Length: 592
Image (cartoon, rainbow, N blue to C red; front, side, top):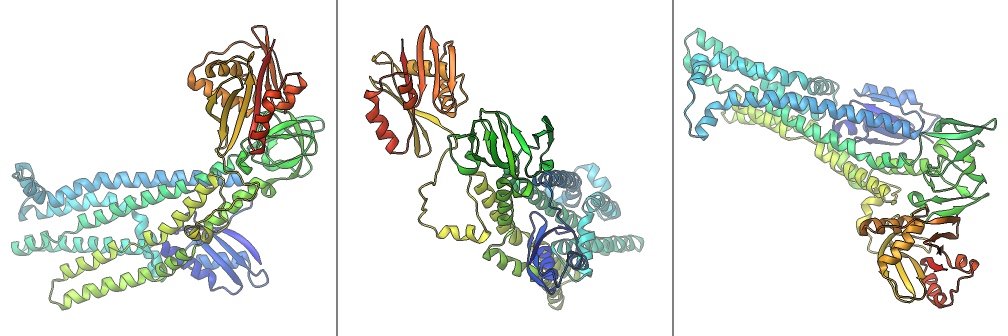
């Protein structure tokens, strides 16, 4: 079985989605066809011996839609193009909405002015009476309304183009309902104008007054404007659903430095080949999966593993894409590039989960597939029923139009996909991946969450939450449920927490270690002034040391303290206690 992703053009509602799926699924050799209305694409799994991509595309075109294969290029490029498309679509819909509202407001005033003044208990101004009021001004009133309606029709012409096209192909959608409803109101309004003109020409004022009340131009304008408001909000919603995937994609840099003929060359990320030597400088994102062949560093893997403390890496250790090189200069031999990297696989998993269908979504699709034809039939039957009941044709037509306009299936087809895409996207944003939409739907049944021994739930970075001082000065910070502690002694005297922070911060501000960053954040919040440090030295994986006012200070782990002949006997019991509870330690001491 072969799996291919297609872009679908021309879909506007869940009925379109159902028609595309139906057109593809009836082909011989199709195993699976999932259409995503939000991202306008389709995942197809089919038997290569019976089908090919061209046959699938032709079946979609025959159904009245457009289709093209999604090229397997770099994920970030695809996402950038999709973001541009979303922005253009939102901009276009906003323009349509503004123009529609600008002309709809005066249209409603001209059509309803007498009701507005009556409601406000104000007499109609003379200028309105002179030009719009009364049967003698009926043609002016009707002509003004249709002139105000024309711009609304023009900017929203796609409803008519797409709606009638789908209707004539036998696959009516939501646009078909809007097109039929508003077109019926427009045609009847034009008919009423002719009858008004006939009545004025033949002195039949009763006929004029009858059809003066049957101008439905404002109804057509209201239909188009309200639907456009909904479409604008829907388009904005579609644009926001891919934000989490965009954030994942942004974890990978657009360019990288590779070693070529012993020279450092900056290349696009998709030009890196397996086996290339990639140079990763301090502060850079890792662009590929690979093995360190030279250098030593610490890698922040929180975006992939959830570990808040960077992991020390040296020659022979693996690094993965999407992580951050904190402070070392390393050369890495690429083992996985492009679509094969860890980050690309995560992005692919999130996209597949967003495109998959939950059981409730499949039910909504089935209903949407027959919804529009049934609504059209009900509208026709409602019109006929009221005519048979003796009501006027105008009244019966208004009933049919109302049925067409209010019966929009978009909410039915969009609610579940939006919820799924937002859910999987937000999950990915917080490091939680769902393999399928069905998994997400079943999550509400979960009453127990079990983590294995390596499972971590963290904030993503250390933060100082409490400082305790005595003759064994203790400071404590936390990462989720895991804790980072540093224990210190200053001349065996009691020191204030601010004094401890002042000395520790002065020493640690020269370090890029995450624990140092946590301490500096606390100092910034408390607005503590720091001191100058001389002879600063950072020992990778061990700690830091420096001199403040002629006094040597050491910050680091227990081993580092022992290496510098600092007596740690008073601390070892506490250190053992903290270590046994899986807490990371930072020991801080000084000596003359």
